[in-house]
Length: 578
Image (cartoon, rainbow, N blue to C red; front, top):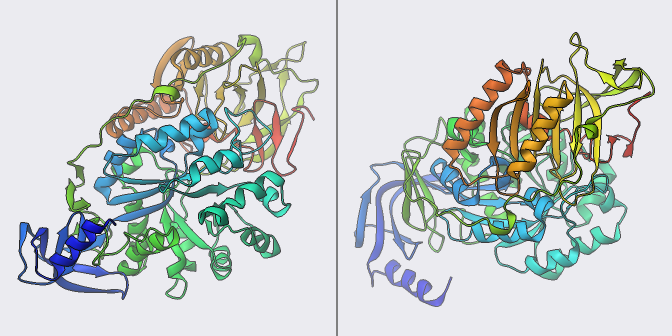
């Protein structure tokens, strides 16, 4: 806060100057003392100046007894997973009450490196939503695939001193931490050097392993799976996030582990949330609402989504309704049944009303991160799946999750060993094609549980390196789908019998688009229905999100990278044939 604003606030509080805005007759949710009190709230220069009655202001709003809550803070998200540019993401989530996000742009950085980080920093600079970034700690996520970039400690240090960069993003390299990998240690050392934060990623880690992980300076985790795991991590000093994304949903499973004694170490986050989910259910407010409807005290839930996050990330200017804080707040008719904002204010300005944006964020030129497609020598032959045996390993899809199972089975082959699709079995071909460095790499494997009867689906969203991933029952449709993505620079596409059924272009690094949230939601809805009805994909899975996680070699068990079939349990490549 600069000197003039501080002095202005003092003058308003002391009655020596008029406020810019007063919200009269409002029930303030006091996250400090877990109570509610009725007052008038005076705002000057985008900040809360005082609570009093009888003061003057240039503009007055009668809240008519509505509740005033601090703006919600999403403690961990990947904006890229929404398919939206930062300005359009702001337009989508602000009406739902999110006024601040802590974003980890490791998706775009895996494709475009520092160009991607620079884009996310600048594209989110002058929009209503406050966007703070974490510098990605694991680009690439593993050395077992080819990503678009490698970011080192020296790269992190170039940006980590920026006031909008709060520290290092989720440290997925647990083995690198506990085994004191030299480069990992160099990144972790930036915490003390620059007084920054380190986010964690430690699913199912406990005991001495957890102790070693926390000892490195990491103090958050959004990957808890059980109430017992939550309690252990909190007892050892971590902040634990209740995540409610489109695919990964942890609020209800973890809620039994939350109580009044540990609630001040619990945050809310979305991690990955798509436009249709935001439109139909909400953004961060949806997870908070779920918790309230399942027994969590509303004031405590709001505290977890505001004050807790501000304290965790040392955002001292927000997170509560009190003098000297930013005037980021929501007006709500009710809090007992969830968080549904009537009005959203950011820095004292009305930016959304009736869950509709009124102050739209301006677009930003994607420049250096547009396209990003460098595929070498792709041909139909790259999709070949030849094995010396009928007995093979198969990736097993688990509906509703991203963990896969280790399966095996017997297949039909041509005389030269080439796989032949069996219409009686739900087994399809999966391929990953490297798209960043023109290596010419391509690998294939078999996968079960997708359900597709005929055709192909391909996308450049393939966590975390985001190469091209394609699934199909025949090489022709798979080839057409891959060629389409190469031609447009990235996105999602579907082919059947050589015909393009529908394509969703993602011009920003093959991950995001400048389209609005409503446009993206409608496009994806239409594509989902085509995938289910035309291609026969199982309705038990999300055809595109499920596919996007089949190349992620940090989540068990079998995954496919551009190098080959990978066994995450043993951290080693395995042959397709048994």
